[in-house]
Length: 197
Image (cartoon, rainbow, N blue to C red):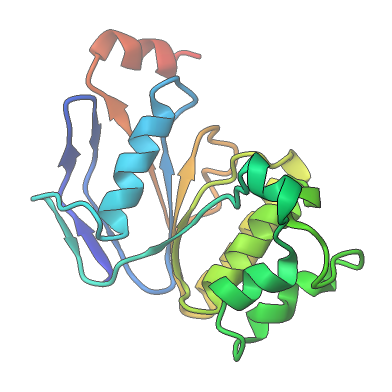
């Protein structure tokens, strides 16, 4: 077992109990609400072990697959490229360290700020997978095709003994996981409205 959640209760939301084991992918549906991003950041910190919650035991901390952001100033004067990013953030002995280059037009010299949503997210995913196969991720900034492709990559990792929590905003793929859990906002009227949308 990697994570044992006995029920996360905050001032804003509640996450029902669940456990995460190797070979499992949990979809935690946050709904698409203006508060969802803040909820995601709290949950990310709990499941990566940065924030303690009395009702969560993190036996193995997950790694969050973040969106690669390069500050505008830096991108103008000293842009970061794919090769440098991998050198800094990936274990070069892993086969995932070069997986991004399977996309024909991406080379080590491709600038990070040239990458659209899907390859940028996948670069971060592959860098994370060079170090661990236990991840927490979202699909923010990806189109439908890119989201499906990225989700399939994660499913393959999980099949090979990894584990994942997908922080989902839209509920499109709720039948394609080990467990599907819905976050509950503490405002009952809002919960009724969200459920009826």
